[in-house]
Image (cartoon, rainbow, N blue to C red; front, top):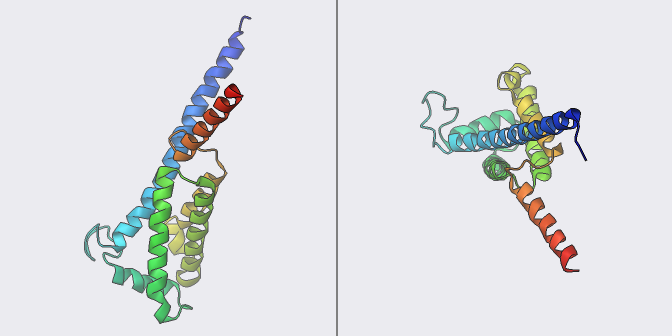
Length: 174
């Protein structure tokens, strides 16, 4: 059956849109993950000592001081635990985002964590601080990512492809 010019244009547009989608989704996912890992690297001193240009904390102690400032309700005894838990969560979620694993759950957890941070900044420092650091954008983006289908560069997409191949093989064998 002959295809019309319109059919060729539509399939060409769909192909371009799919490629654009995969690139944009992967860029969003990897950008968020690298952002989280960069914050962890900063508090561990990997970007340089305190006072180095573009270094926010430079060590874990300075990060804990900032954590205490944003969480005045938290007892001082619990602050080191809070700092460690948040650091582990950010590192783990950052790696999961970069790899593209369990994106719905990873996106939601990352969004909740970033939104909590944005709320703490707003209540303690005022609205200007989270707006300057685009924390609301950083908290909204993972929620958007959680609603998207896996991009072709993610491990989730690879898992879906492999499970589909397995189903096709089972159908052929049966």
